[in-house]
Length: 520
Ligand code: 3UK
Image 1 (cartoon, protein in one colour):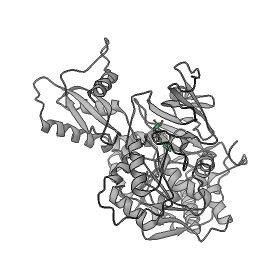
Image 2: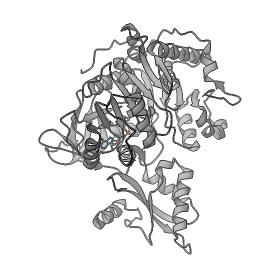
Image 3: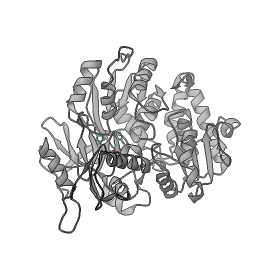
Image 4: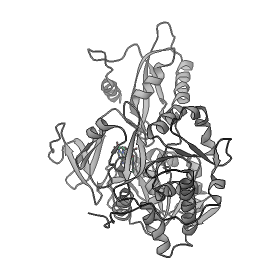
């Protein structure tokens, strides 16, 4: 096993909080957040106060606590505070819409929700429909019927003995979306974070206590949670947290001001950063390594970044189910356009449709074995069995391994799109478009933009008598943006007379993809 032996009785908060105090880092900065600097002592006290406040509310071991939080010290304290008292936090995407939250909160049966004030507006209209939710705690100004986070923890003790959890107990969940159906809650165990921190963060990035991390990907993503929280806390480093929308200029400003040594981003945001023309005021000289994940990093972006900022981007592939990156490029050995080589602690198999291993050099389905894989999907037995096969997990990705052991991404085996590093289901976008009174039918596929990054394109057949106009095109895009998470809207929309279909009437997205490919 590629991680330190953990005792049977183990609570993950001890590795990421207590160990830093024991190592004498109590007065060292753990979190930089605007003009605040929180030491490891401050963080430990806040974690324990939050844990004690949850105990006082009557939250029990194994019960879920939903976190709808911007990147902030409160996120950190809620996440580790819940783990410490034995509850199971669920960091949740802050970019979704009320119906999404209604599903997630009811599906998880969370008994408590900790929410940032600006996000409360998504919860208020559905509050009455949340069957199991007993307590709402708001970070910031709180409406009636909810608790105010700062007041809630103020008088609690800053000491809390960790709950008597086991190494293999549930620790936290992360929801992941699929092509059809609702998102699935991936149940991660107490030992998963330490596995990723040791094998990827230490093994590949060589992270150490002098590192300062800044993750453009937010903490609610599996990617951001490692980058911006449990990686730096594993080695007693410092994390820079930024609560706002990660637009290119503010990202550059944060990097210039707070001087991270490790910078984590997604390809779409690298493209956005490279599109900023005047960067004279910005300085990236503190950064020793840049990391990219979430979607494949095109070689052109790697090259442009290297020549502009003289620092490499290490592309690596991870997933919510495996928790973090399991194949990655290494410093000074990166092959642009590839995902790199296996991370220690993980094994890979490239197989055909019958799960038979393929000869090296052929394209097939990627399966991974490693001990950070989630135990199962909550309430979703068939989906669990389709995805997790004994010790192996199907990633849903197509890969080819070259002679030197580098892995080359070849696309998905389903129709799912990664847009700006976040899942978009074409089926959900299509269903939304069809709910517009002018639309008869439609199909959505992924198309490459000028940076070779995938964005959704919709083909729309209008109802009889409806005239296709540029105004209607804009109206339909806005319609989607208003109904579902805005990053899912089609960047291009083409009106067509008919869609390619099978004899049984199923829309053939692959024929649309082929038609687009033959255009270029
Ligand atoms: C795709 C990539 C090519 C691939 C993630 C780092 O993205 C993460 O998790 P998700 O569950 O998505 C997983 C899927 O995204 N993908 C991710 N990275 C790459 N494709 N090259 C890449 N470098 O389809 C994968 O199956 O949202 C990323 C760390 C933790 C993560 N959860």
